[in-house]
Image 1: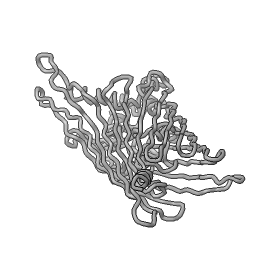
Image 2: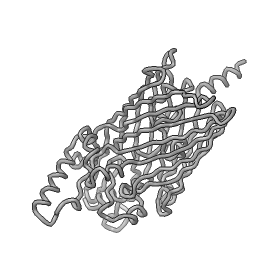
Image 3: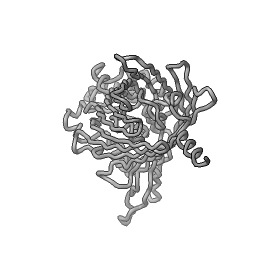
Image 4: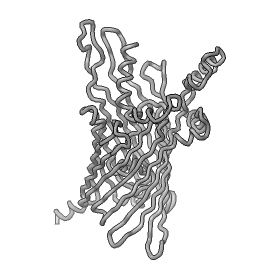
Length: 406
């Protein structure tokens, strides 16, 4: 399985853009301990608005891409429905054929305007990869690995201020590796997962101004493990807990400004490391092997609860596993938007820290958003990442069609 291991390693380097060399240089080797998961692309923000706010979206105003951030927001959507298409050229400083494409949308159900059906489809292409050499030193084969997810969600208002949502998802990760010269191969890894979310919004008076305060939560990718080798080795999905709050207030007529905060934590148990055991003794080796066996056979549900207390460094290391996102959005007449955000991840957990900028323009029916990422470490492959989102509003389209008929 030597060549297979090399392929997995190569793909991981691209996918785990996350784990930049700069982060590792800032800390000691025995302190670098990121949480390991499979299908890591599920954690990549698909749209320009959320990414330009520093990966923030648990409690922001509902939009077409709430399926990723907090699907329960759809029940409070301002429009009858809409559709959004996003495109991200990923790691464009390194390669030019890796990308994430995402299609998302929702539709309000019934005459009460208190429930919505939503869906999204995401496709992550890892580009073209050469999977090794044959006996003559020529490329054995070229593959096009990809990861794919499709989901369906339902959200409903439980009161005038609070809603909840659920999403069912199917996930496929296909590395497409099959070496006819060595007989090495892998299977496509598939899984099912569910998201649970909630959203609360209220309108307090600050002075003479009516403001908007909201908070929300989303637990995403609660599901089965994935395996590329017929179950010999299994990986946890990137189950994530997102908590957020957002405050919006008017500056003047047609002008609003909002500030948001999101906290994220992977609900995945930390994989045991030899460095945390006395491997020079037989007893230490056995303790490590027992811990590793327990980790490999742990169920995803047990792993969620274990993830709050299993870090080798204790509570202080558990705190390091929390990612912080801060963002601000200025809107003029809901037609022009300017955004700024910051995302922080502790260096020992990957070091994916960056500033983000973005803008959006809306013309009733269509809205175009763009974002730009500026990593705090120049060596980070995430630096200069661009995202584009094109959104179509069904109410605007309906009004436009009605005017044309008249």
